[in-house]
Every structure is written in C-alpha cells, then in structure tokens.
Length: 440
Image 1 (cartoon, rainbow, N blue to C red):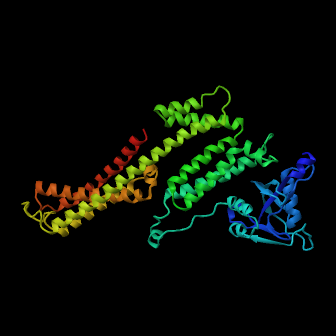
Image 2: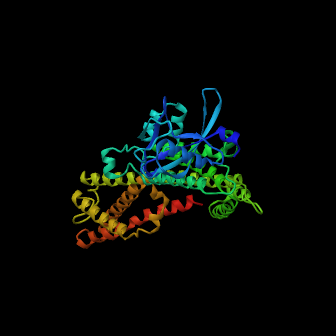
Image 3: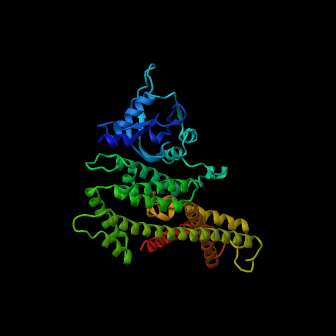
C-alpha cells in the first residue's frame, strides 16, 4: 500500500463482548467531543484488518479476535473532504491491564446495538451500526390462547426465521474466507461499491426480510430472502459456481417443465464456465416455481379448512334434526339411530373412536406427514377435524343403513360404527391427490 493511499484509508472495529449470535454488546468510545467506534488511519505496510485490530487495541486496551468484515461507510470530514472507513467485527479476549493508557480515549461504554445507535454522535455512524446489528428474535405478539395452542408461531414462520439466520451466517462465511484476489477490502469506497455492487443490495434485501418477518409478513419476507440468496451467488468463485450450476441443472430438470424448464436450462448451458448472472437467472426461475407452488398449496389448504368446517356443521345440524324429530317418519322397528338424539350421539362417538384409531395407525413418516400442505398450522388442525367428521358421519350412515336393512333390534349393528370410522382415510388420500396434482 502506498503512503498516499495509507493516509486516505481508515479502518475500525465493532468490538463485541460475546459472539454475534448471543445478543452481544459493543464498545463505544468517547473522545474529546464525541462518541464513536474505534478507528484510525491505515499505516504503511498494514492491511485493513491489521490496522483495525491495532486501533481496537490502542483505543480500548483489549486484545481481540477478528470475526470478519462488517462493511464500509463514507463520512465527511470538517474540511469537506469525503473519507471512507472499513469496519470489522472483533470479539474481545483478555481484559486490559489496569494501567493501560488509551490513545485519545476518555472512556468506554459497553452498549447494546440499539443503545449504541442512540449514543454515537454522528447520524451516519448510527445508521451503519443499526444496519449491521445481529438478527434478534421477533417480538412475541401471541395472545394468551394462541400461546397455549401454539398457533401463533406457525411452522412456516419458524422455517423462515431459520432460513434468514442461516443465510446471514453463510454469507458472512463466504465473504470472510481467504481468497487470492479478494476485492472485498478495496481501499476506496467508490471502488468497493463499483466492484461489489451486489453486496449492498443483498444486505438491504436481507434487512428487509428480517423487518418483514418481525411484522409477520411471511410471503414478503420469503421473496426478499430469495432475492438476497440469488445475489449471494456473486460471492462464489469459479469452482463453486460450477458446482452450483450442476445442482441447479439437476433441480431444474426434476422440478420444472414447459417454458420455465427451457429458460432455466438455457441459462445454465455453458461449455466451461458459468457467469454468476446465468446462475442468478436460473435460480430466479426456480424461485418463481416454488412461490407459485406455495400459493397453490395455500389455496388448497383454504379449501380443506372450509370443507372441515362445513362437515362439522353438517354433523351438528344432522344431530339437531334428529333431536327435533325430523326423521320420525322413517318406519324402523326398535331403537333407530335417526330417532333418538342420545343414540345418535353415541354412534357419532363410536365413529370418531374408529377415526382416531385410524389416525393413530398413520406413521409419523407416512405420506401425510411429509405433505407440504401440512406445513400450514391451520391445516394441521383442519385435516384431523375433517377426518373425525367424516368418520362420525360415515358411522351414522352405516348404522342407519344396516338398521334399515336388517332391523334395529340387533345390538351388533351399532358396532359397525367403529369400522365405518375408518372411512376418514379418504380425506388423507384426497389431500395427497391434491398435492400431487399441484406439484405437476
């Protein structure tokens, strides 16, 4: 690094008291007139990482471990010149000696990221800190009854949270791995933005996904996360791009058809190398297919919920009609199921018992457990409810039919309600059929 460039370039550190995934605090230092982060000019012969580590040690007294690149920001000095500083994450290790003299620092405060945003003296630095805070858990907005039933935090929302966190950690790992010709540490902010334009866009999209997730806008969060994941393909080197291209080709051949399959395979049709933009195009087609499938599954789940509610209401109305004597005109000798509300309720219970036996026989690794429709929490409630309603209704219909055929005085006919309850398996088969048709 030339002396002229060294004087123009600065590096600093976000010094943490614990790892990023453990809700850390960071060190904010007070100089004569302001609160800021440790930073300073890069000296001759230093890399940005070395300069940042030195400034952290000189201005906080801590020996720290480099965790990785945080990002770069621009600021304007009092003389009007625009400068840039590249920040790195550091994890503090040994406590400083009591007699350690700090370079121009009056005091140090350990603050949360939110507190640091409010404490620092410069708005642009506060915005930088806010944008590079580790992801935190979204607020728990469940009502008491939702907490009890665990319906507020759905499976799909938990999957979204996990996907965002994993992508954040994977991206940091990609950016921080050693590479022979890494341009991530460009000394001029304009050069960094020109050569690594996708990083700013990917980081903004990831922050948008975290914001949407905290507001429980699941669909928007997934779209933003997928966009961030596509831009992260630009982080890969040639060998990684080649491997990813093979995976995308196999996925496209397996999942896509029609124009989407043609478009994805055309983007991946390269004899030797794959530019990132080609993989981004293929991945976008696959993401669109996944989004369309998700929307269709959600619509199908709504139909299942509606069917479950209607079946339950129909069974209730049928019992009420029996209680009001609506079927007394049917001439059957003996205790007929459609003449007595208590007998009707007993047959319903026997049918539900048969349905529950059938449900218990379903293996946890069976087709229904693997169905993506079951990822919807409401569907996990609606499908069993529909199966119980089908079992109860089939029991009443079966017992009434047998009684009408052989007479109501035979006590064994009521036991027909239990095997009749097994007809609820039609619901499971219907769900599997719906999903197989949607997936084509």
